[in-house]
Amino acid sequence: MGFILDLTEMLKEPKGMIGAVVVIAAIYFLAKWVFAPHPDDEA
Image 1 (tube, helix red, strand yellow):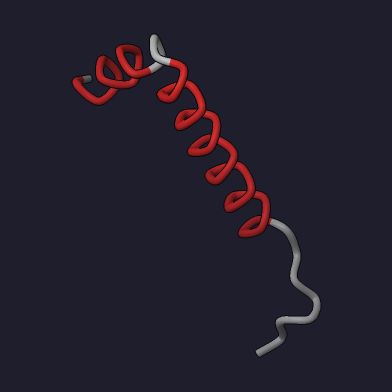
Image 2 (image 1 turned 90 degrees about the horizontal axis):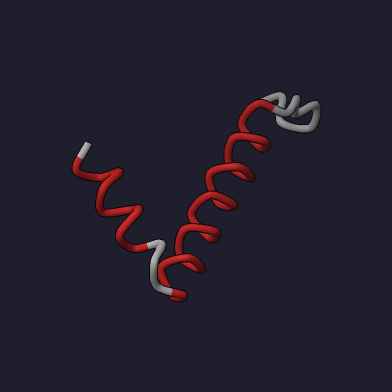
């Protein structure tokens, strides 16, 4: 819960907003990469 409160506090600042966007984008692309089929990675 404290993490969410810190996040909302951070979003009030422009640099916090940019940081949140970067974090969300990183999580999104990581999840997309992890869940995508990898036909070349038959290790």
